[in-house]
Structure formats: structure tokens, C-alpha cells
Amino acid sequence: MSPRRARFVRNWTGRLVAFGEFIDGYDLLVIGAAVLFLKPSFHLTAFQVGLVTAAAFVGTALGLVVFGDLSDRFGRRVIFMINLVVFVVASLAAAFVQDVWQLVAARFVLGLAVGMDIPTSHAFLTEIAPKTRRGRIAGSLPNMMWLSGAVTSVLLALALQPLFGNETWRWLFGLAALPAAAVLVARQFLPESPRWLSARGRGEEAQRIYDALGLDPPKREVSEKRSYRRLVSGGAWRRLATVTAFFAIQAFGGAVATVAGPLIISSTGIGVSNTLYFSLLGFVVGLVAVVAGAAIIDRVDRRRLGVWTCLGVFAAGVGIAFTGERAGVGLVAFWVVYAMLTWLGPGVLSWVWSTEAFPTSLRGLGSGIAQCVTRLAIALNVFLAPMLAQKYGITIVAWYACAFLVSAVIVLVSPWLATTGVELEETNGVESGKPV
Image 1 (cartoon, rainbow, N blue to C red):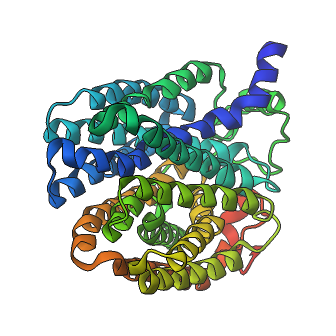
Image 2: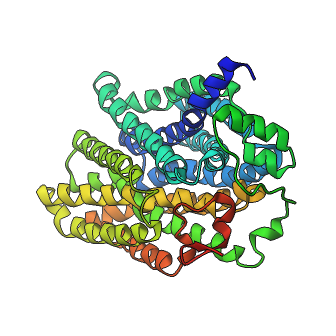
């Protein structure tokens, strides 16, 4: 590796890998804004809105498991190169569809491409992160990117609406291809994950990449024999069940402040533009919360942070349900708290815990399973949201907020989630906050 490439790798690897989450955030959240224009353009029923919105999440769920496993087999780098090619093609196809079923198909393929990237880049970020900064690198950084993509999707919708009216959705889908193509070119220069190489017995290659990244290798390198049984043997099944349940349940409730937000807020009758501004408010507040959380996530007990923020989100959700029908100051205040606490705690912690739980040889698959169930939970949310909002209005937020009560209980009964400052290779042995 030349000195020039080594500098590029050291400075840009984390950001370019995490930028995949910008694309994920933009694409999966843009549908919340795009559906406001799709409904009059295609005269969609509530059922069709749910179907179009859920299609990408179902595609993502499939891609997460299949390509998470392939990234464990063939490496992280090759998968997060292929996925962007598929994404660029599918984004352009989505912009030119002529009927609802073409759009469902295009959104499904887009979701599949996103599903290729998430467990791969997620595992890579975890594997290059020092233990003192793993929360920031594997949790806060990708979520900053994800929320930046969401903010961009709403800002574009607001900017393009006066120009293109009900055809705004075509531009929102098509423009996603531009950043994806740019990242595809830049990722050509990135290396393989050094921990993945070590697990495959390729220690010398791994050391060169550690040197290029300016990182010290872990004190205990592990060369692992890959076996699916390791996901369910011993206490591994508890970790798999815990991180999957926590990730999926908090995401089901958290979708109120993200992709399902426009569908629910529009039930108050405040209009398209005001609905978009509400969504933008939630994303901006979330971004601020993630940035603030990055300063503490590697310093505090993550388990306690998870419990208290989940309880806070539940309380805010109840507040939205009781004040929302008047669409006044109360709704805005509780909406801000709901979004802020979602991203300060559970939204980021779920990303960290879902890769810490698994050995390197199965990290992509384990993370993929957790994220797969999560995307199906979000798909269920957004499928139900337009129909429930039409019937019950904004009070349904209280139902969704109950998910955070369950999430708090899951964290409370899982002492191994206290992984702050623990070496990645030792997190599987953590009980009550200390490696055994």
C-alpha cells in the first residue's frame, strides 16, 4: 500500500463505510415524503400505500440475512461494492415506473441492495473500532449518516415540490443514484476488514491493514472455525434472541418518529408542507441527539442508558396521543422528546449491541438476522400506520410507544449488555458488566 493510499485509508475508511447508512437513511425514509405525492399521482388506497411503503423493508430483510452470511464467507469489502451497483440501477428504475406494481418491484430491489450493505458495513465498522470508541464508530457514526440521509430526503422534497408537484416522487427516487455512484467509486480504494482476515488465519495481511489504519490489533487475536452452530450453542442463543428482540421492538415503536411519521402526522389534517416540516423536525432533533450521545456512549453504562431512555420515549408517546389531536404546542414538544430520546438511547444502542453479540466469523449473519427481523417489524408498522391513522388518528402513537416499555424490560434482564470499554473479542463473555 502506497503512502498516499495509506493516508486515504486512514482518513476515509470509517466515513466511506458509514456513508452506506446515509444512502439507507435517504432511501428508506424518502418513501415517507414520497408517498405524500404518490397518493394523488397514482390515486393510491390506504392498502396500496402500506404495500409500497413496506416493499423496501421486506427486500431489505431478505438482503440482510443472505448477504450478511455471504459477507462472513467472502469478506466485507466485496459485498459493500456489489450492493451499490444494484442500488444505482434500482434507484433509476424507481424514478421511471408507470404503475404501482412496477414501483413495488423497484422498491423491493432497492431494499435488497440496502440489505446487502447494512450488515456488511456494520460489521466492518465494529471490527475497526478501538474498544474506547466502539460506541461512537459502530453506533453513533452510522446513525449520524442515516439521519443525515433522512434530513436530506425531506429537504429535497420541500425544495422540489414547488417545481414538480405530484411528480416530485420521481426526482426523490432518481436522485438517490448520485451519492451512491460517488461512494461506489471511492470505496474501490478501501481495504478488507483486518479482523475478518485474522479470523481466516491471514494475520500478516491483517497487520498491514491495522498499520495503514493506525490501529493496534486486539490483544487476543482469534482464528475461528466457522460454524452456524455457534449462533445457538451455549449462551449464544440468548444473545441472538436479546439483540434481535430489542432491535426489532424498539424500531417498531421508533418508526413513529421516522418513516411512519408523515403517515401519522398527516392524520391531524395539517397539510403536506406542515407534515414534511414535522418530519424534518424529528430528523434534525434525532441528529442532534445522536451527536450529543456520541460524547457519552463510551463513557456511561450503556445498559442504564438503554433502560432510562426507553422509559422516556414511552412517556413522550403517551403525551403525543393525549395532546396530538389539537396539533398545538403540546404535540410539538412531545414529538421532539420522542425523537430525541429514541436516538439518544435505543436507536443507537441497538446497532452497537447487535454486532458485539457475535464472533467475527458470524458477525455479518448474526447482525443480519437481528436487522432482518427489525426491518420486518418496521414494514409491519408502516403497513398498518395509514390504515390505523385513518381510523384512530394520532392516538395510535400510544400503542406504538408501548414497544419501548418492552424494550426497557429486555435491557433490564440482560446484564451482558453492559459492554462499555470491553474488548470486542471479550463481549461474548460479559456478565453484569465484567468479562468472565
